[in-house]
Length: 142
Image (cartoon, rainbow, N blue to C red; front, top):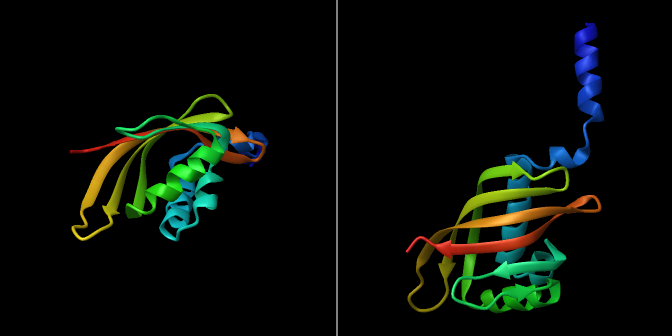
């Protein structure tokens, strides 16, 4: 009984930031990102990023800062949709950051719509009580 109480007290004293660095919690954030994108809410997508975040899209220039990221994702929504993100691995980087490796699937828009799959790496940072994307890079499997 005493050991159980000690274990419970120890768990309750762990920093909340550590709890958000598991794969299930990050997957929830990914699902929120995908839902915002798939419903055309570019502002909600951009809100997932830190103010000084970097987006490193394949075959394009770096995008720096939340406002530029908002513009980037608004433009991307004209060409792609039905994004699905799957967290494969999440590694804590201290108490206030985590590295995620994942896969994505999406559909191109247009007369000859295609399914596209790929992989990504992101760095999440704790900003206040929230987890935000600080670095976002991806490429396709083909």
